[in-house]
Amino acid sequence: MVGVKGQGMAALCEFLVAEGKRVTGSDTAEVFSTNSVLANLGIRVRRFQKKNITKSVDMVVRSSAYGDNHEEIQAARRLGIPVLNYIDAVAELFNAKRGILVSGTHGKTTTTALIGLMMEHAKRDPSVLVGATVRQWNKNARAGRGPWMVAEGDEYQNKFLELRPEILVLTNIEYDHPDFFKTKKQYADAFRTLVSRLPSNGLLIAEKHLKTIIKKTPCKTVWYGITGKEEGRHMELNKTAALAVARHLGIPQKIAKQSLENYKGTSRRMEFYTSLTAPVVVIDDYAHHPTEIRAVLAAVRRQYPKRVITALFQPHTYSRTYALLDDFAGAFKDADEVVLLPIYSSARERKEDYPTDLLERLRDGIIRIQKKTPAHILSFPKAIARGKHLVPASLKHVIITLGAGDGWKIAKALASKF
Image (cartoon, rainbow, N blue to C red; front, side, top):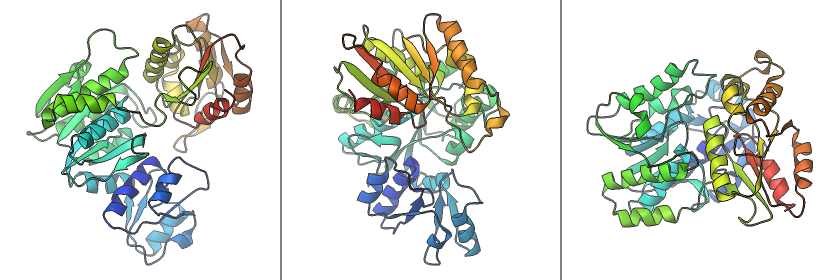
């Protein structure tokens, strides 16, 4: 397993070990949340080096982060060992089961976890693949023996088109991944293609606002939603989708609702690093799209209506920041202060292709749109130092780190102070 510490790769290990496969893996020395998961599976993680690949290896599975120039991939090619991409390995497992695929721009991780836990509670013994650690399992995969597999479907690079679900849950569709999908139409077309491949005896469960995007379906469709204002109520929407799956599978509503009420969350989704009533509450969230930021901050504001909220945002990729700049600038209305962290760059893009003052443009946009909301650009060390001295003892405060990168490290550092 090349890049074995990735969330998806570690989850794949869970299934392979359950099938009796002998799994080895390699990665960088950096500590990931999956280190303990791999250790519990008995998988020794080596540093990247070509000597890891020997004739005793039957197959190499690589993370999507590593291409043909990687030394271990090249070593496998020289030895004639088959190399499988991560998504192809997942497809082999998923397509051999009755599949429930959860996809959409936002909410798919939580909804996948909710459905998987609900089916487990109903004794359906599902296999489940989630994009973050499920707290009730302390890992992001469950290798079950039942006929069903629940998986999170990633639209980036059209990866989810390799999967053949019987049931498809679509949470929402909103333009993202501009480095791959050059237009909004291309992005929406990927989801339309996914829907078009559903079997005639399958089921589409889709959020009601998608009726304007998904106009034609090859199978039965259930539209779901909630009444009233939706902003800040994304968890209610996710639970409504899970209940729709329960009804289709014949899971008693009492059992389904009990499971949903007992849900303890996943890593990096409204993850509290302090107690909920601490003088300074520290939270981390994976939100990296304007809509996600708005929803998370609205939920925090509902929970803490009288507290000062400081949002520390680490933009994820230059391409997304550039393409959605105005949307990002208007996403912080429920924050009293915004701290912008250096952009988390991806190996799939070149920094020099984008304006050098991109972060300054975002800061100025926030100040222009939010009017009274101060915004600053700080490095990680300066953000930590500022956070530790941010709040007078008499003033209650919430500090939330936002982004798909490593901004959680700031939340961890600040939590140790408070």
